[in-house]
Length: 479
Image (tube, rainbow, N blue to C red):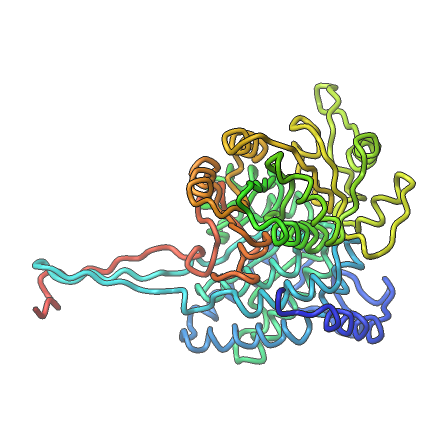
């Protein structure tokens, strides 16, 4: 993101808007304009059978042929990133077109392919043992509404590189853009000499179709990128499952940090795609002696500071009361507010600001619901702390043991090390915006399936393989 100028973003958005004045009648879960999506089924059983045929076809291909399919997926993703970005915002109402475009480019450029599948060998007095990474067969994948087409394409690249076929059960609120991505993968496969249907999806994904997918004998691996409910469901399926769950990433800023940079980085990360990525900054713990300066820098970078009373009014809008099965009332996220612009959220409490306002900041106590709940909105609570001990204690508690992502801005190696050890997250970002943790302005590969609960971490092609061992006793030891 650091290499993309604001002028370039404006030009891309202008081009997209001029080129794509589509209405809801121009797309649904089966088509976009005159293009009929390939690989979309009304029945999950039919989708799984087709995905299995795709698996058999790709299994018969060479690694070089698989990589040719992936190369074409990357090419089409780059070319059609503006289309998917625009469609994603139109369908879900969440996020920002220019940021979604950048996420698709990230997926195209930094998702590992077949180079991630590496065999190993061990020789000794008793011969040779070869270990190869083999496909599971058909992978059943559940994808979110927050990063829908990005996750479909990222997963498809890794799963195809591993030699699998794939069947998706997308989030019901992002079917059209998810199925656009499925169709893109199938078009790439056909263009590169692969099967016409390699990955599949549903016309109308439901909990029932997800249940069929989870229990079907042809589905050998389940991969879930979503909320805690669906992750629990796949983990209780009795099958091998990869679960990418929720997070509530805290940020610590101590008094050795570059405060000017920290203020910009935190707002850049928190507001990327309106805070939809699970890795994004969700709450800040700032040393008391630098908190005022940090807030000033945040305001310079597009933050709007609201009062405690205004924060409480906003909380009553973005969180709503629901009753659970026992009749007990609890607060849940207002889905109509997720991923919305800061300007839109402020207007709901009667505050009118310009489009230059990217983030809503407020000072709160640790107990405030903005600190405790993952909002996935450009709302950032700030809690003042006295020292590193208090900061780490509160930040670890706010992360709620998800072990997903945490951030820190500091030049004190001891403080950085102490927090990293204490929080135990899959991703720990130091002195950078959150998106550096998935390779956006940072080193390392990209993924939108971050499997903390099941331990795979930053998933890639090798995550979707199983080890196979071939042993030749007393032979092929040439030393």
